[in-house]
Length: 212
Image (cartoon, rainbow, N blue to C red; front, side, top):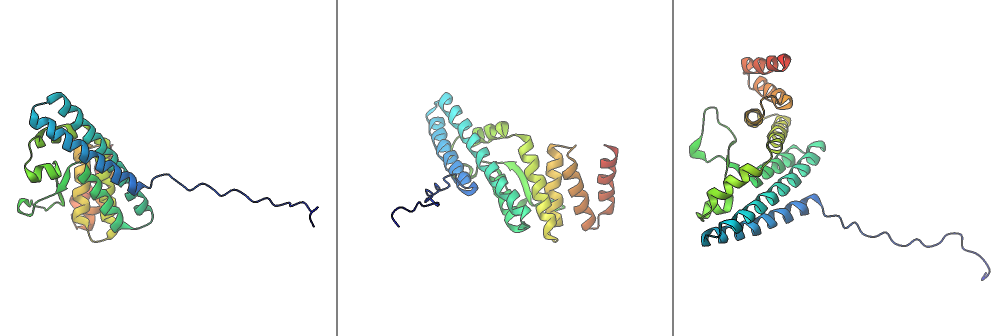
């Protein structure tokens, strides 16, 4: 009847979740980095050293933000046992920071998955002026802890595939080059060496862990 009271009021709709996804954060950061790098290269070509420096630094910060977003996405994939996706994310994060795949004609013995040099992807490929300066700024502004964690996490993801032990050892070795006391990277390199049948190297790493 008209005099009845309604005990259940209609709830207002919940606002949509407007928080950007990790993937969107990465895309936005990389786009910002590309814009800042274009600006920096233009200033550099015109001899505007001060403005170029500021734009190079802005590009490096944006690259780091993109790398962090890719790392978080990789961690999420790793926790979900999606090793291939985790590897793709960690490798992409390293590329944001200038660590590119090793050219085939520069193979070393034993072969490594990366040469881990700081490079300026598009600018270096096109031969634009300012590449060396951006590489220097990127290297100076990139936190070593971020690089260590990316290399170490990449090693763990390679190990989990069960058939990429060479790559796992290379990634762990790079983490240890940057941070020789990193225990996680040391354990992962020992596991990779053992899987490859290099028991002496595995024993050396385990002994290092026990001694530390």
